[in-house]
Image 1 (tube, rainbow, N blue to C red):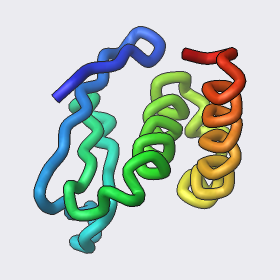
Image 2: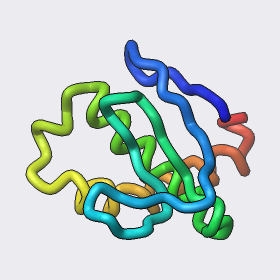
Image 3: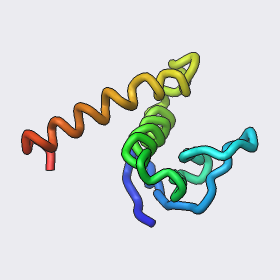
Image 4: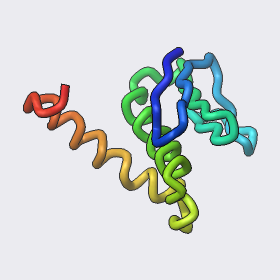
Length: 98
């Protein structure tokens, strides 16, 4: 378990054997905005990088108040996730982000 500060909020990130969304379906991860908690499933290790970026984007949108500006937050986050992950990986490879 670890924590990360997003805006003025401190989010806890933890892994769980199984993660179930609010609609009852098993998922790769979720963000609990009320408790400032991000939960990542241990069942999908090959998707870990995508999932953490995806959930962090949800947390950033909520913490910044920007989630109210997006009509379909899930779609917005799904579109941005691979692009942000690619940029982060490129920055790390070029030693611009360590």
